[in-house]
Image 1 (cartoon, helix red, strand yellow):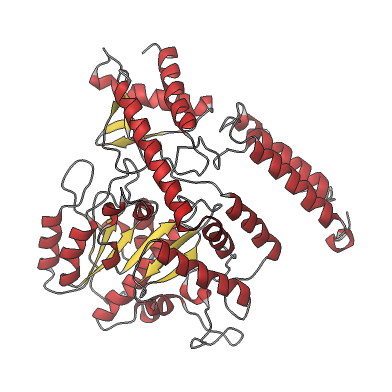
Image 2 (tube, rainbow, N blue to C red):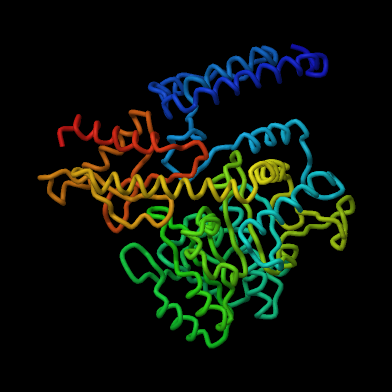
Length: 475
């Protein structure tokens, strides 16, 4: 095969083929098993050595589409409950396709005024969607891990400044250990971010008052008072992954803010509770945070991957991430240069999908979606409560229902193994996708409802399949 330039006429046919395959894939996503039978076996046998002579664009796309049809996880479909992950609304998906076609370098105004403007507007709309104070500035990143990393990098900059140092210029080797305090709900992505920032993920002081991890406010107050005014970083959690629970953010703010602590809120999906009147109180106090992290590819339903962070003092992001070179914009360039506020210099124009879904459905549409998902979670909790072989383990405060199989006559000591086996059988079955977790020391299921296409029938099918598999297991 010749140089791609000599085959540029393949472009139109390639895009047409891709559009047709994508339309077919998405048209059947609600009816297809989330994981097709034999997918893992097919992938194990697939793969050749790098070809010397290529097969051309259309042939390579046909091979890719055929493999995807047999093996791709329908994780953007309505019955993927395994992780807290949405799909892509029609507007977001269309914009994401255009983002690939336009292929903007979303580093700086100089590389793409269009991408920079879209990100400025999209992040302002997100701030307004969640009714955050105007002082907050937003950035788009790859997901909650980088959102936590970016926000906590700003926190580290503030903490070092309290000690008369510039962490991002001079490092932190000569400074005291930074106190980082959180609850038992602290997410691995936040732990990872703390580790990458050199603050020691193993040094996060977890203050939990019960078996599931809610923050111990009295212990937090004691710990901060013992620092005698020295700066600290407190991570509160909005939307715990096993049951959707929240740290009491307003109460945490009451303790942390007068005691010289930076308050960061990890709101990967819980931030969206702010949109619905029935759940908004869970986020009370978040407006007092110094930084907030969240995912757009969760409840906003833009295609993977996209996250965002808000920081009350955005200059601290510039302190952490601005780099200089003769060919780059100056640090005092008045234009929006989001690459100078994030850890990624190579940045896709994620703002297009965020802007498009907010423009298409507005505040009211996204509120309605969240309210519908909350109603589905309540319906699932009610179904679990009425099934004699199932047991709910936590209040369904948001969009996650935590429960386990508990058939009559099965000893407590055997329930964990039974639920592990049931979880493995559910994933192998593939019709719906929901794995197990450990909640309060017990193996359980924790389906998360965030996909824009999920209906009551999808939620009912989850329980139907679990009960069917439980019956097959003879339990």
